Image 1 (cartoon, rainbow over the protein chains, first blue to last red):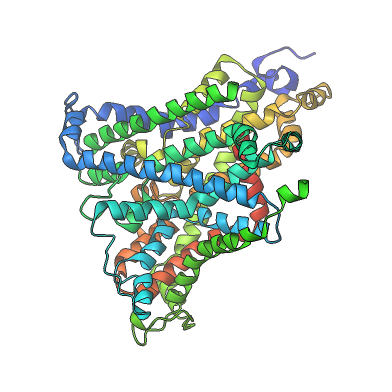
Image 2: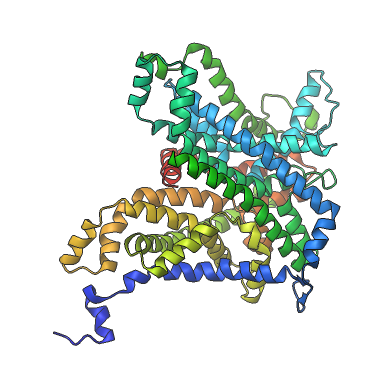
Length: 298
Length: 275
């Protein structure tokens, strides 16, 4: 028997213990490229810093400046508005599509794939494509309408609210297939006996949906609602591609504002904005987690 | 009775057709725009394409799209390899050995799962300047793998918990180490969850723009979303050329999806059910 020196611990497999530390490489990477910058960000949010010179501690001045900047407040409103439009619409559209495509018919698999296709394409590219199609006057749709004698006089890019509506609809078009797939998975997990029992009892379709389908869809609902809240409050590429934040700053989101402030040498300030965005995301996510976890228990 | 509930009623067929058309029409419009010949200008465009294929090579060359696709492949491939390697190991030890260290790591990762990358992009940028990581493949690979790490570790640990530990234990009785049991016994069983991680996170890495716009500034390292958006800024007057660039840009992801759609759908399903 070899003496149990530290060297032999590795030679003799059963006594080694490094399988217990297999998460350490992941932690190292995560610390360097996530936790460390995050904590640096918290610190720099209390400083005046251009990204190059020595940061100067200024306390809460960045946060005060944020809440006094009308553009920043407008951006909060835009971001929340986008999320309030996008997240519910995505879930409603996704659920309706899932209920429809859960039925059997010939081209079902093809239609499902077709609906999911936009979700694998970069939102930057997809936004650019819709820009080519929807641009007022110059866009393909406007030209085609003109050819059949319909002069499109309204210009959705003139006002922030109509521009935002277009962004929301494009986003729903792109990602409805994604929520649909998750709802479909949820629907297929419901045991068929539950339907049969309900049908034997003579339950109506509406009641089957309300009392059997909906409660069992809670896990799917939870995933969809939470990922959509996070995704839509961090919206970035789609807006840049479609409106570039315009007209003026009327559709600029907070994440775009963060990028522009950091380009403008306001590094300290932009990290403060990032933390504000973090809390704007955190609050609804924690609320929905609490709501869904309570629901799942009952 | 059963049949009636499961099959689609005939009145709903037009609805399905309409939905399918709605999903396809933008791509069709994009194609007729990309195939437009210069004669007559845009106002002469018709619903029947001109089949002027020359826009594609022009856009490919002008936008350096070939280079962007190589860059995308390197960075997404590298990011996925780093991610799979680290997250499968972490998921394994977290699932099998609930020590204080492992529980803490898991708690940290779970808490960070809901923080989108944009939150720490600016401080990360200053860190990467110091590490000389701006305009490098390795920095994007590590950053994208890091951002995907929490979710991937979560998926792996949930999946490994569902595999009976007795398989590994019998290998260990036969003289295998725990680490060897992981590589030889558990790893080959991780196919479904790995394909789920590859698909869910691979799409995100392939389409990354929010980090690329900060960390990849020179032409030689641009990824596809960046190349297409810069193309739009540069050639903002030539719509057929822009449409051709956008078509080429979406093609790799779309083709990958069409070839592997079965894996995509099941990958997303496993990923979301476990989540």
